[in-house]
Image (cartoon, rainbow, N blue to C red; front, side):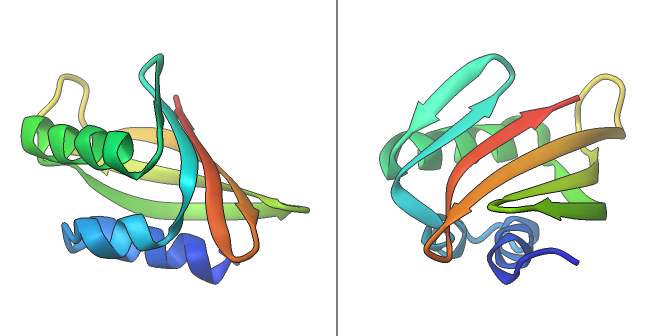
Length: 106
């Protein structure tokens, strides 16, 4: 079962709701995606809006596991990109009911 904050992240992402998505993250959170690192709300908002605009992706969680403060979610990601859909692993680190780190990898 996914932690509530991770469910909230995917729900906000699906609704294209940047504010709700950013509210799931700590102010100094780090996101690593496609060999790039984005830290803090401003950088993460820019990364997320750019990815949504470029690929119009949708991420659907398939399964999740929790290990301590980490949640690993395999999600089917489809959109306007070569090889769509793909299954990507979203590795969340959670602290004080906020996401402090997210690594997205194939």
